[in-house]
Structure formats: C-alpha cells, structure tokens
Image (cartoon, one colour):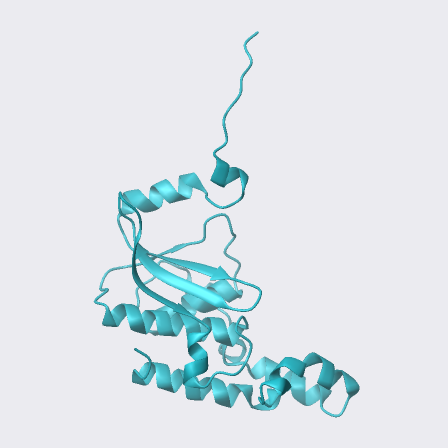
Length: 194
C-alpha cells in the first residue's frame, strides 16, 4: 500500500494564510482591505494584488489617531471605527474608486466585532465594500456610549479606578469618551490627517 501524504504549506501550518481565499482574491483583481488587531493597536491597509507582490494603496493605524486627539484605547471598538474611517479617507485621496473586498485570512468575520467596526468606518468614508451592513455594531457602541454608561454606573466605586486606569492615566474621562470620539471623527471627515 502506498503512503499517502499531502503536504500542507508552511504558512497554512502556522495559521497565517488561507490559500483558497488568497487565490480567489488574486483572481478577482479587486483591491482588498486587510486588518490586523494587535494587543494595543489596530492596523489596516488597502492593497492591490499583483504577481510580484501586493501593492499598498493606503494604510492607517490607531497610533495616527493620537495626532487627531484620540487618547482612548488603541484597540477599542471606537478606535477600530475611526481607523477604518481614516483609511477610507486616505484611500479616496489616493484615487481609489472601485469596490474593495474585505480579506480576513484565517480569521472569522464576527458580526459586531472590532473587524466589523473597521468595515463600518470604511463604508462611512464612501468606500464600496462587499460586506453585509447588518453585521455592523450599533452606533452607540461605535461612538463609545456603552463605555460612558458603564463608567457612570461604576463612578464612586473602587472598581472604577481599576477598570479605567489606562484612560485616567492618559487624562481621558471615561464618561466623555463619546465626545472625544465625535471630535476626532469630525477632524477625519474634515480632512485634517493627510
């Protein structure tokens, strides 16, 4: 009896590349958005597939939001939305006019997640994206109102300091996170960040 062995490519073994999705992406020849959420920040880019390698059209990350006044978490739902909005604005300035595909690789697209918040930011900036709009988080969660309400409920308790120590250290009142969100969103839409 013959020994049947199917080789699994290294990047698939390491959990980095879904070759079936990647092949379909390359065949489509449409630009795609790739999102990476680290332990502290969100990174997103729109690229065009090419034979010699992907060419980046525009990129944005949550670190750039600090220049616009965002002092909240770099990986929260509001930060993900703002990063998507910033990426969409930059890619439109770079001349992107066609439809974009959301490439998740081996990660699942979960409705209401941080990945869907980035997608909502892209759609709100005017980018045409192949994604179901019903999977986007609610406006209250995108703007951080849920964080503000939770902070109001914990105000005066000892857990307040522990839960919001990072925001307090960056001199951001957790109850005013929605106001800061709206101010940064207005700057992005107004075209402050180049």
